[in-house]
Amino acid sequence: MKRGRINAYLKFQLGDFLILRAGLPTLVAVMFGYMLWKQMSGSIDWTTPQGQGFALQVFQTIASVFITIGSFLGVARIVADDRSNGYFRFLFSKPVSIERFYAQQWLLYGIGFVAIAGLLGYWFQSATTQMPVTGLMVVMGLNWILIGGVGFLLSAAINADAAVLVFVYVLSTILHTLKDAPFSRMWPWLKQLTRVTLPVHKVDFIRNQLYAGNSMPWMHATHVIMYGMIAFVLGLVVLRRSSFAR
Amino acid sequence: MISLRGVSKSYRSLTGRTVLAVDDVSFDVAPGEVLGIAGPNGAGKTTIIAMLLGFLRPTAGQITISGLRPRAYVEQNGIAYLPELMALMKTWKVDHALRRLATLSGVDGDRVDAEVARVISLMEVGEHAHKRVKALSKGNFQRVGLAQALLREFNVVIFDEPTHGLDPVWTQRFRSVVSDLRRPNRAIIIASHNLDELDRVADRVAIIDRGRLQRIVTMGTQGAAARVYLLRLTGDPAAVLAAFPGATVQPSGEVALPPLGVVDLNAGLQVALAAGAQITGLSPRESALEAEFHAAVSGGQPAGQPAGAA
Image (tube, rainbow over all chains, first blue to last red; front, side):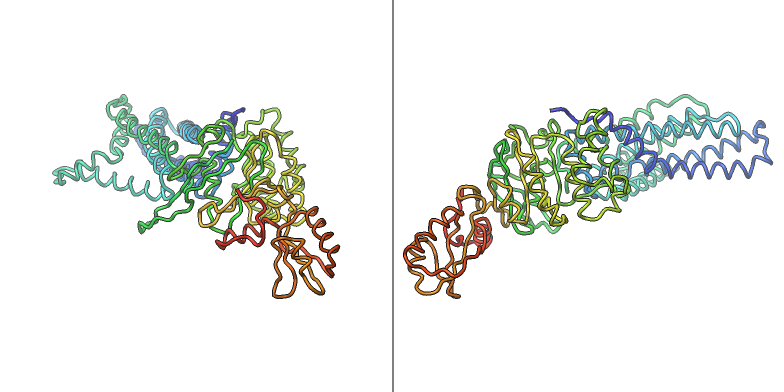
């Protein structure tokens, strides 16, 4: 028997990405960036050090908004939506692998967000001055691997994935902030717990390094990539080994 | 082709209580066969189907399709499946949804539009092809569901409540759709509340109640049209009772005959008339399948002789 043409289905997944996932964060970033640029463009000379510094601040703010919203909206309910709405009954009675279907979707969404981040970065750069666009794309990619990977695992496992992902992210951020604070007096067990939460502080560190024009801190990047990819692979294992219908 | 051996499925509630949805069910479906699954609401029909598609894993027992575990079979071959709980993205247009599903079904790229047009024409949903799914009536949506199941020739067909929401015309048409789907190498499973529908299209019917397989009724041993008839008489019913072993006199005075095909019915009537019976009326009461079903779900014996329980 001939299998389903999962590669050809990519075009439909791309359409879903553009309409359902990327539209809102892109619109927010474009509007936000345009408003700031319009407000400042008359009064600031982007070629001066002061103008360049201000442009970088605006760039970082917009990038941060896009990366955060994009990562969460991109991965939230990526599996759970099909499961809880019952779409899976039509999709996966066809000769396709469930893991392959979602792995392709996850990868496409990640590449899509990196590409859009690059386009937005170049658009902002063309309107202002030299910006760390490549750095932005790398940070977007790392953020997708981390948030996208953990979000994928949660979505494969439970239906309330979006709320749990936000909770885990906020908790991780708080714990890392407390742990890294000067004179931190964290309980040892909480320190151990913090070590296994999302390494959001490492993404922040990498971002700061790259935006400052420094080279990639590979130790931190490897940690982030490993963390996210392990979660992603665990998500695939959950899809393979457990009942899809709940 | 399809084999279930001692299949059970239980769920654990949040309070820790275990609910047994399917309990030790075993049956086979041969290539070329149409198996009906009948049962009241909550009997476990849809759970069995979800396990056949690999969407749920049995808690105990084994399911194989052509020797493979269900999920492996589906991923390699696909199943023409019409679910009871149909759901498609509401913003998709009908033809767009069918193109997506044709692609996943493995229809060649250059054949997708032609196959979509074929099933749209077959199910007569052409006027709705460019409408969004959310704009469809229940009946039209059901026809779209049938259309997507027919996008490709699969060797296993599973329909769960296929005529739910269809008007009488399409309910009748459905029978010819099933008839056209019959192939020597194809197994068809139809789960339905509609016993009359199963009576007409199935070769055997598995009756499920409270998660257990109560019995399998083989249709056709006395003809799919075997029914329980009521005879109205004047005078002594002795001649009728002698001509139809198993017949019983009802409180109304009518005589209930055991399930009979047309040939046996006429032969018995000739004997009864020759013996002097005065028959004033004859009417069907229920089919053999209805009798079996009522007996199975109430835990008793069917009225009269079984139509071929296995």
